[in-house]
Amino acid sequence: MPMHPILAEARQEWRRETLYHRETNWVFASYKCGGKIPRCGSVAAADYLRPAAVKAGLGVYAHANSDNKLAAQGEYLGALAAARNKKALEAVDAVSKAVQ
Image (cartoon, rainbow, N blue to C red):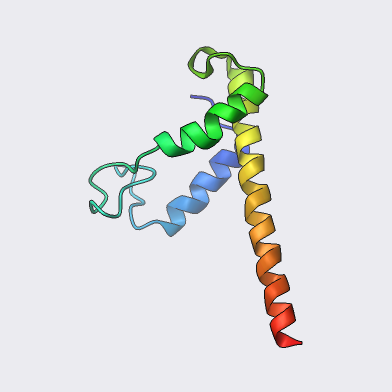
């Protein structure tokens, strides 16, 4: 499957942080099950991947061409990055106010 460069970089970061980082482990292993099965991905697909695919102009995500898949991944990752940055800025703002 084509992988957007931002996603490839995020995957490498995740691999450095996760307890289950071997080549034979699931990328997103279930902590509850000791890494023996993957975490449920249907929530992310329903909440983020499908809307990003629709926004990128894809009718059926699974049958899209590689360029459209990369565009959908980019939309999804952009939304995640924006949410992460917003949370980080809110945390910095809260600490700033607490110090004053």
